[in-house]
Image (cartoon, rainbow, N blue to C red; front, side, top):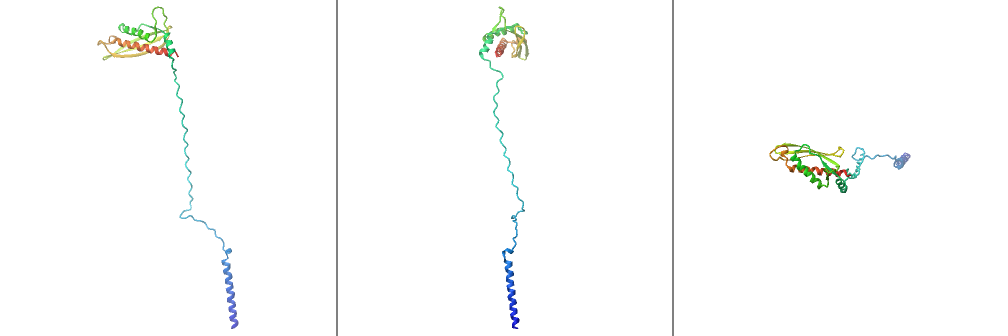
Amino acid sequence: MRRSHVTTVSLLAALTLAACTNAKDVLEPSAIAPQSTQAVPKGGTGTTATPTTPATTAQPSPTAQPSAPAQSATATVPPAKSAAVIARTRLQVAPIVGASVEAATPLTAELQTRAKQRGITLAGSAGQTPTHVLKGYFSTMSEGKDTTVIYVWDVYDPAGNRLHRINGQHKAPSVNDSEGWAAVAPETMQAIADQTIDQFAAWLGGQAG
């Protein structure tokens, strides 16, 4: 009986020692295998947002350089040259075609006066050779209380070559309650003469260049 009790105590001691050894093995840190963990985004689906590529800034276009002012196609004729050409001019006025004598008389007289004012010499019958010949063609047109004088002047050289043409018309109230040339006032023909000589002188000045 006593031996049986000793045997039982020895067996319990052996079991206790074995239990302690097993517990030490379990608690040894080296016995625990490391476990890899993956971080899970909080509250997300795991989709990574792709950063937006910044918009390319438009390069400003180069500032256009102001263009140089265009040069005038027609050079200004010096007054001295223009005056020299006019001074050498000898103008002959041919008989007027189409106008009545009453209308042509104030026209011719004013042509002479205006030409003298502009420094243009009129070639007479004293043997002066003209440098230019002026031939005029006239007609009238009456409408209501007005009469229009239509005129064309051709400028020729002594050889008969046409160099220039001047044309126009002048409208004015009719006089004498009539039509045609009888309705044309002397002032109308004088105004036409002034315009003719002025345009002729301007053309001469342009020839100086």
